Image (cartoon, rainbow, N blue to C red; front, side):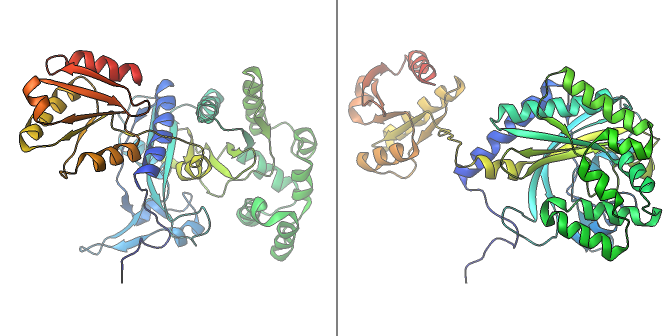
Length: 417
């Protein structure tokens, strides 16, 4: 019986892996253009850290891949990149503030695999620690919008404020002990719909006046219950910054709750215009302190790279990594091929040499199938004359170069690229 990938996980074959890498490279360039620097953290963390109260919340415990190692320590695979980031800030107090980092890496969640939902997936995060100002929230959104535009997506960004939603809930008669349940139910609105949300509210005995205010989706209407609070001002400031910068993709969504418990202020979500959520985040001002650090405000966002890949896979066309294919016909030609290839690589040309000893016909078929733009055949005649013909595969045109004129050949290849 052949082995299969573990349930909820998948392989990325070269054609797919290159497309995924392209998406990650675009995100990386955008993040770095805003001054964010890379951070790497282990996949494995202490289970207590991942399941801490006030972090992912009780529900996240069921989604953690956890195990005991040979020393009987309880460990788990990280379920996001925010918790490890908060741990790093908490335990490295000498980090310069603001600390701006990005991380693109795999995370794991032991939930039920569904279409386009995996147990192992890649996230791309940017976070800022040490800044209370809403300017940091805005920069996160601005960088996110830039990334989406560079990837060619039509998208929308919805924003809300977790603290304001809590204030609104209490003002609408939701008891303190019901708030978490109410938010968990509201967070499922896109999946289960308004009717089911109302039913679950009734089952939990939660006053549905909150839903009436949320579905009107008006700050002015909501503030009739809450008054002008600090959280309302923070949300208005964020919306104002977006408007001043022409970010028409951003809109208010009072039903946006975000499922994780660590969010404390402005929260946001990015959705494709005709598709699923591909990114989300918000402010989490208490998480770093929860992990033993100093009281440190923080905000960030996480992109689901696999979601972006699934949306772009059929549209992306990524060419071969190889610029030139060299087919030696004899062992002596093979030695010369390795020398030529080494010199070309030093000039920034990607070169593949036939390793299988195939005949000319099969090598041409191979280069054509791979989409390699140039091919060189080296045989006895080429070794005697110290010259070779380069064939441009798309046009069939050939041009001769001396072994000593690899600079001229490099210019041809780079001009084609």
